[in-house]
Image 1 (tube, helix red, strand yellow):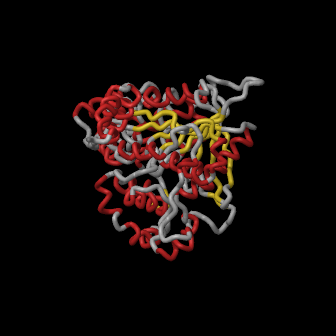
Image 2: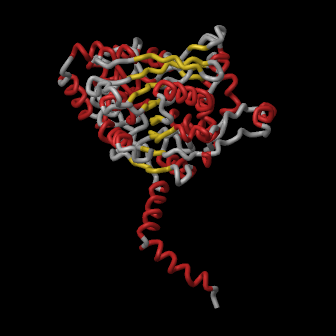
Image 3: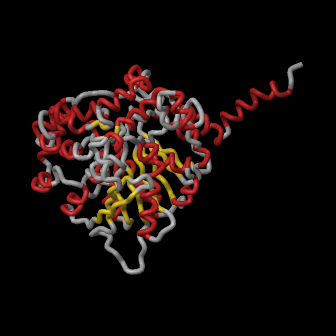
Length: 449
């Protein structure tokens, strides 16, 4: 006679299929098991026609020309928004440049009304300008300011906006300046920014929007310094670069030996990788100006952007491809890039592997790096992901959300766009309706905090 447990198993399976809650869980798991192939393509003839049409439809050619090459503060001033630069010093001496938009022409200051602060944090290879590239009605920074939020556009150490240090010898020409990865950004940069913003606003908590590495840095902070969970009202993770085991499979042969070449790689480049110079060499001139011209944008530059970011013709604003190169790709530390390569290789979310067991033991008290304890996260989190993201693949999003405590993970949202890529979260022409509207609605209604 079979045990009662075995007899009940088919009934349990049937119940799981027909029970709405369990059926939903089954369907949810199936999403992550599904294969999401990368959609790669160069511009089609239809894309090129659309590109030329977009240039013909430019309503203010002078403004289009004026915005090329502008910094964060210059761009905001040109578009009629107030801006204030704030220098923030981290515990380890780095000076970060933060840009505040205290109000907007559509939402002026009102006596007695306190605006809720929002921190916008960019990803790897970018800077805070990423959140300002799209038209003012579409980019996230100005959109939030228009809705009445006190906006802080942040820049991680190493960005051209954040290359200061209290030690005069620690300049960007010194390789020691670049001896950091996104671990230090999470442990030192993000808390310094939060402290500065709450000191200015006299509020106990902030909203936080992090793209890619910006989300990973906050994940590190909340895992390693859990006292900061109470300082985050709600965090919005746009394609969080936490687990990366499926990232660009063509990279896997390269990253397999990352621990062996990392020191040569870092020393040869002086600790920094100047990506903007590489793009300039490829194009033969400054990409922001050259790619803002119709003949280059619709032929060479848009295809180059497809190679960098992945194809999404329907969401590409071709007239702004040149301006995008002001924000991405830019200089980064080689150690940061190496750390991400280590994560791709191991499919773990751990601290930096120094490559030698002796050094790891001195640093971590063990032969291998310590992994981040995401069980410490308690802040409300919303995770957004795209089906055509080859940097943070949907399968890796599945692993990330499985490590976020259920009480913290409020929503996991697939962007309703077939080709949505990693950089579409900040550059897609319809990101305002596909992603930002949800963010603004949650903030306005204080849905989770």
